[in-house]
Image 1 (cartoon, helix red, strand yellow):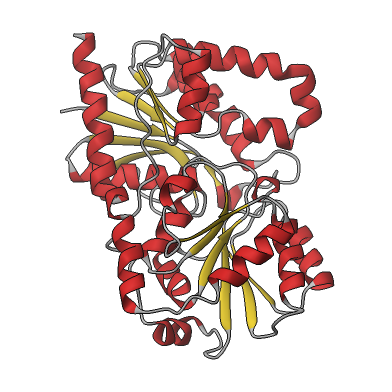
Image 2: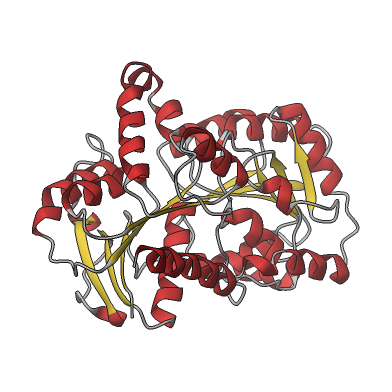
Length: 385
């Protein structure tokens, strides 16, 4: 029976926002369900037993005790601790290592070279190029070197979308690259709830239309164009409320911009995933205006809860939103976003449309995606024997 090592800055006992975190959480569910011995190397939000829930948990950072956030981002501190600690980590020699981050995987390439390694990848290098453009201009070669080393020492690469697959095929034609394996969703959790009941549950006004954003408040999410589009929408209607769920390094900057330019915005911060079906179901539509994505989980979660999506053309969205009933794909500017939102909010909603949206994402159920992923891992391992 395979032994699995999942390495990512997340707490397996505390579901959190972020596509990478959700992907790893769902992967963990499948590994545990299949009875795999699973080790998680991550971060700790509060103290746990090291073997609670059948998981061997190795936390490298305790968030409650972390005081360096303004100096060193948490993900970077986790990475530093990983490289310092990995030599001393007692891992089974036959355990397979799965990571959603190349910088994490590199530690295992260098220090645990006998363990088979697998990479789940979306939009490679984009965060570094956009968040630290000056650094990337002069040291982008270093990222490219890391990428090359990792790809050459990875048994298999699982791109989350066709654009990521095309990127790797062009650069590394000899690498073992699978068909895209998109981010999974938990259809048992994300389900339609009658809108009036959902609104009562989360305290949103019964007689207003709700436009929902869910995601990290960071540069790549492109929130200024959403606020500009909503400012223009408010000239046509004062019955629409823009509800923003999530946190991130730009949270206060985005909230200040919203307070200056819009009237009907509501910032709720981070919400527990088990409460999110109520917020999706309370909304009339979800909006995603990112500059870059892999396989955005929120799009599938929204459809699973029966609501349409307005999105820029990123990642695999154009393969998901394949019918006007599912929503609308727009250009990456505020005018196009405004028109897309207004057109979707005029939909005549009914139960058939809600059911159609949910059915459209059944193939992304965590059970199906997890089985596909582990089947490909097993085939790769058999090919090595």
